[in-house]
Length: 261
Image (cartoon, rainbow, N blue to C red; front, top):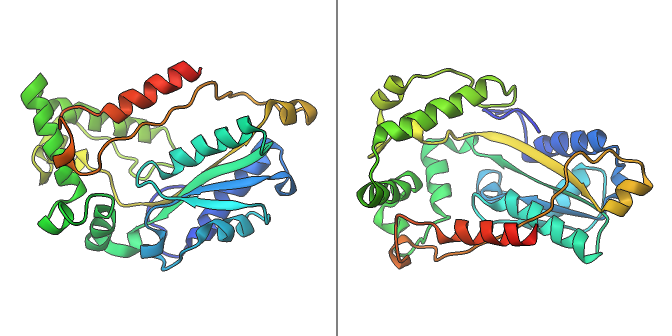
């Protein structure tokens, strides 16, 4: 994993190469053994003008293994891992690199906000002025109306997240905040203030996944095993959903993962 933050002098392939090569070295797996690359990316075509990024990132890792870019908004790299698991379980691959990269700070706040809004329904939401903070603010208000809660509850989450960043050398914002500071921060989309919203960032991460047989044959110390994986779906536009206060896709994915395990 690279550090996350503003990296104006780095390209997307440079950052993913750092993360991917470090993952291969950490796993003790040579690039020549990689069977496939699953690479998650959402705004690369907009931020760098670079499409067809899968083979570009494979080349950066020193391999010409088959590769694909997976675009699924915020779930892009998560689905890269999910598809890597499926490829190994099917017997099509023994070694897969899965990960992703985003480079957004060069787009500026307005450009990145517009780019991220592309994950919403352009015709019925984005053209009416909906942004991602605004969409999630609607969901938060619906949740409060149905179940109770307040902005102060969210402020505790922001404090917890910043505390976690203090012990993570790769984190973007390594600063401690208080509940009062979170509550008094500039409003983004009520009930969200600045510290409830994620920063625009640059960075990359990667994992090396192998079959149990490959790990055994090469005496690899695989300290983590993926025993269950799940993927859920829902309608994209908020107005098409049965409820703004529930996320059935999360429930379905969790149930599938538990059943799989």
